[in-house]
Image (cartoon, rainbow, N blue to C red; front, side, top):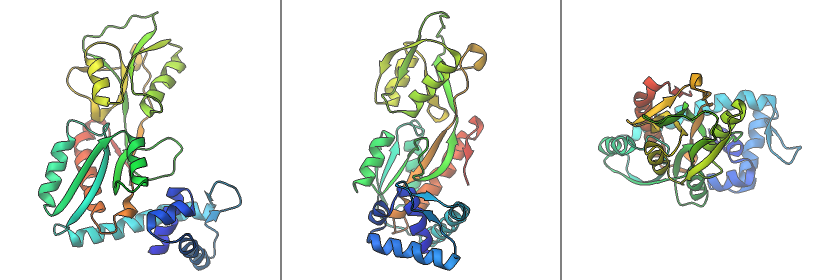
Length: 289
């Protein structure tokens, strides 16, 4: 199981050095685990010929099975520990993630696991992952950048165009947008859609807070793209028939599961996934096995 965890961590981290840091092992120890796994399977799993590490066809086939085996192992450990799990878990969660519902979900987790000291930090996805890499957080749930192999995808959240319920479009004029600062996947989704339709646009409001951007939209300053978890009364979803093509969904992933060796991460992740699936199922949330 340790060899499989090393294999998955090397891929998620993008290299042996970063994987060793995450696992609390030396680089040579991690390399040896991968070598022994390859010898056992009689297959090369990683292509080390180029500067960027990549999976071989055999590695691609193994990856899905390895993640499921590790998940089952961690779930078993978590089951045996819960509800007697105790200790501190420093948890970072992106503000995009169900901002109205997150406090209630975390309160239910505290009641289910009263001996876990949960230290929650809410922020931008990029900031949270950076803090985790610096050792300030144990676990992060945030959006995953396109093309990234880091983290384990938990679900795919639909993204929609929204405006205030009484907002009226003015065709032929640049579309007023309320946006998060770059780099931001929601901002990118907005630009991609308008590029496809050829609609000119201008930024009228920028904030690093999803709550502030949403408030600007509710005030009628402009429109934006949001994940369905961030919808609130007073917002109207804009349809393709109105000239707003449906954006691609966003991957929400968990980062740092391998850091929490004390077994606290898995109960929290599974609890949050179940709660969010129940919350967003009517909106079309797609869970990832």
